Length: 433
Image 1 (cartoon, rainbow, N blue to C red):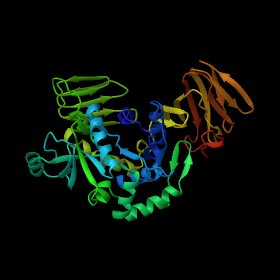
Image 2: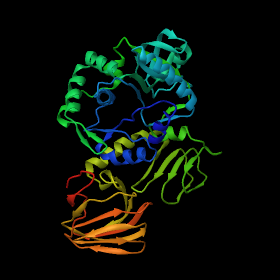
Image 3: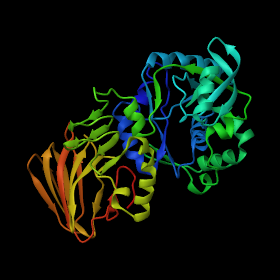
Image 4: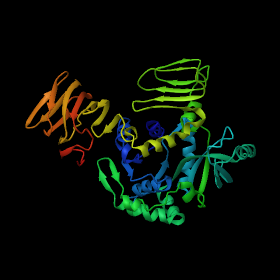
């Protein structure tokens, strides 16, 4: 979905793709955007601070060289079926943004949905744009039905178009606490490879507000362009089920799935066969890390489950089995007391840091590709089916010198196998121990 979001802008002359995410997601975001040639600077929020401060960081970054570009702000969890309709709406929005408007795209509603906020339109500006009269919080069903019957109401999409300077000026006017926190936080940022690390102490002084509450509800510059493009905010498993093609029994399946007397369910299997018998209106999601089973109408309560796992310190809430790194990724195949088995995938030309471990030894077996290995004072090539043993405390490194991905199995053994048991001596990606 992140890739689809970036690719939707291929019809426009985009100078830079800015991404905003948290520290834990930085490598997967970088890898996904690099693989479609859309990698630009990635701003790392020290902590999730809602959309107003996040967009402020992007606007500050975009104007850092005395430029004033138009920003197209696109969340990465949207489904949009008609790219042409989106492009037409964006062109209208760009025209209004050049005139100094803060433009939002309003989704033409096809049902009285209670899960979205609404935009009430005011004076018509052009054939395809209106002044915003009001932003309305998520309504009850009766109110949402009235909005549909009245017309002149659109779903609030969270898609925005405006000049960076216009947004910053309105933010300074209506939410000065956010601006006065984000501006010094960005000025004190540090570059780290493709990442921009924001000053944590300054950023955390910002109020936690959405762009709607901080700016759009107060400014006189807000306008809306209607969008009818098969849009959906895929914020829950239930919403994914609603917007995917179902079978004759209203089931949506992905992966290796077998069903018997099952109706109205979403079943997603990533790694193994999942079978259901006599189940109705249920979500089943199988991943490398865990399996989720819940009722369709309670799928949003997964948040409460995650909070419970975090509070208990469950390892599944802290570590994924598939982890992205600057050089590629590793997949934890198995782990137990005093051992761990990983599959490493190293991109062509990428190199793991020169390092040693204080608590574990490692055994490498190359599955495919060619590696240049450093082991103590020795340097040698490892090819398919060849292996090397790295004893506890021994200095070592690994580099993919081939043209294709290097894949190898790494068996770790020792009394502590945590990812923080790394003493880096040299690192081309600038990481510290």
